[in-house]
Image 1 (spheres, rainbow, N blue to C red):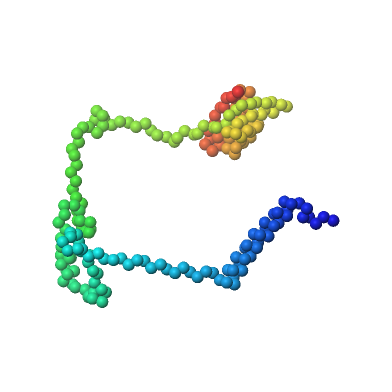
Image 2 (cartoon, helix red, strand yellow):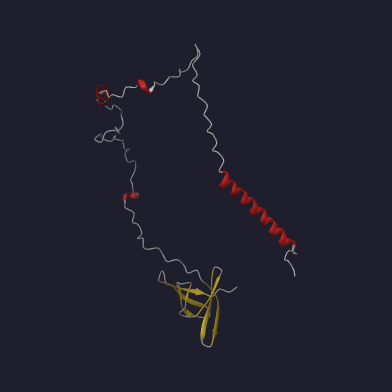
Length: 199
């Protein structure tokens, strides 16, 4: 009786699976019983040192921000009234007022007639766009027992159709002749005659 371990390849695959399972089992036991590693301690950002200008050197001095304990939270109505009494004196439109008039822009005078010879050019009436062409290629014809069949090509797809058949869900074959066929595009109600293409 054979034990099934005679094939060396099967034994190697079995051993590799055992090693992988052992690694996952060790990781699982560590995660459940030992717990996750402690979170890394936050690294404190280095303090920004204010540079005081040396005497006699040019450049703005660093200003020390006032502490929050010395700030006065009370409103000063006299300061707000002074800000509200200011009037806009710019030469453009005041974007902070709904009633200000837009800036009057100067429009250049017309230098010539807008239309050639001062006459209105008639535009051709634009109707609906023409229907797309039928993308079928008629490359073969067969007649057997009174039934005519056309061999059609649409890209890489080949169709064999009889009169009255619908090809590719929207091309209806109306008439099949040895050198041409009549096809109707059902989506656009467009009928076209496709010639026989040889070669």
